[in-house]
Structure formats: structure tokens, C-alpha cells
Amino acid sequence: MQPFDHWNTWRDLASKSFGFSFATVNPDGTPHVTPIGSLILSEDEPKGVYFQIFTSQMTQNLEHNNRVCILAVHSSKWFLIRSVLSGKFKTPPGVRLSGTVGEKRIATEDEIQSLKKNLGLLGRTLKVGPGGLNIKYVQDIHFDSVKPVLVGKMTRGLF
Image 1 (spheres, rainbow, N blue to C red):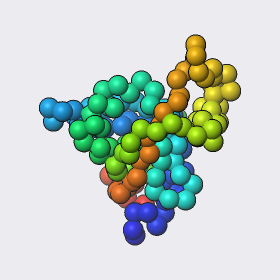
Image 2 (cartoon, helix red, strand yellow; image 1 turned 45 degrees about the vertical axis):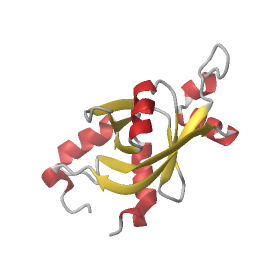
Image 3 (cartoon, rainbow, N blue to C red; image 1 turned 90 degrees about the vertical axis):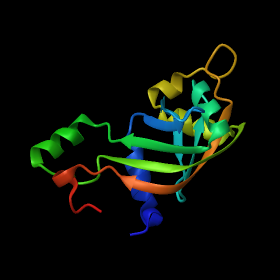
């Protein structure tokens, strides 16, 4: 199986994650992990966009090395409980997406609306702009690798 033959599977799995862990490399070579809640994945190709909110160290790291690895873990307690009780995951419990991050650019209105939709009730009450959350800038991510999170016998045979 080619990793992106099943982009919809990976995108759907990632959409079940409440937040994402973005791993970058500090200038001294040490790892840095940033929690991000603003990742939006493309419907039909292996790319996405994230909003630059509370990302100062990650932004600095990406200036030196534009590679990123993102971990998305299925956040449903019921998914985990059902899987543990049955002894098997029906889908991988998470996915790792690796790729390169592009230059900072101004977010489109469609991207802002997608973020608000993804945030649900919080997104509907979100104040944007002066006195609110600054969601003006985004960065594109082009993925070149995808790997499911596998958990021994519980995920055997999935991929």
C-alpha cells in the first residue's frame, strides 16, 4: 500500500483527535513538541494548514529546519474502552504525518471559517481580531510520509 492511496482514511483518523502534537527540532538539535489545536487537513491531497497561535518556539525552529512530524491520536474514550475490551483496534489509534512547512502567509476567510467549524461551540463564540484571538497567519504543510500508530497484537493486520 502506498501511504497516500488512503489519504481519506488518514484524514478521517486525524479528525478524531482533539489536538495534535507537532514535533520540531530546536537549533541545538534537541526535540521540541508543541500542542496545536488548529490543524486543517486537505480533503483530497496530503497537505494541511495550521494557524500560528501560541507557536513562538516552533516558529523559530521551523526557520532553521522546516521538517515537522505531527501525531494525532483518536481522542474518544469510548473508542479506547471498546478496543481494550475487545482486545483489538478496528482502526489505528493514531497516525503520524511528516512533511515540510511552507512560509507564513495570511489566512483566507475559508480557512478561518474551517477553523471555527472544527472548534465547534468554542469556534462559534471565538472573537477574532483586536481584543480577541489573532488567527491572521497560517503555514501550509506538505506531507511526504504517513505512518499509523500500531500497538502490538491489538493493531495486527490493520495495515
